[in-house]
Image (tube, rainbow, N blue to C red):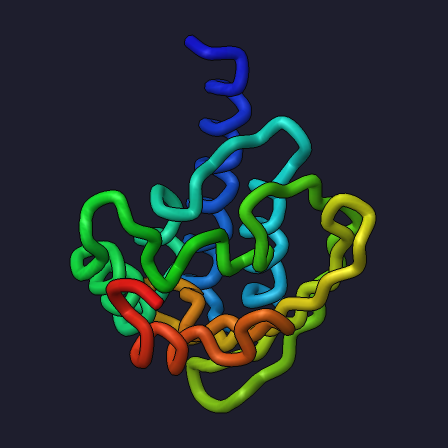
Length: 159
């Protein structure tokens, strides 16, 4: 097994535990823990591509938009989603993650993740929804892409 194999398995197991906790009690604390687990996958040596993680992290609606972008992008071209929207980056070296979550209605929450990527401060706001027995990311808001859902609806299949 590749040296990073055990680390990836541990991260996937942590995500599963967070999802189970959210299913048992979908409150603001479990929303915060879910987002903290999401960002633990960005440890210095971890290489867990967004595309592989997306089905476990995204709501049905956001996942459908991401998959539509992939399907409609011609082979060899760059789609609307040309990086990892969770860090608003293509490469990462994330540290100092701090997450704050608050309720946003029944089965909904908003989380703000603040961190450093290659030493530069970043803030990502996530709209969360309870689906598939746990918390899922329903929209992502960054300085580069203020509304990922709107952006993908307008630009899927390329720019």
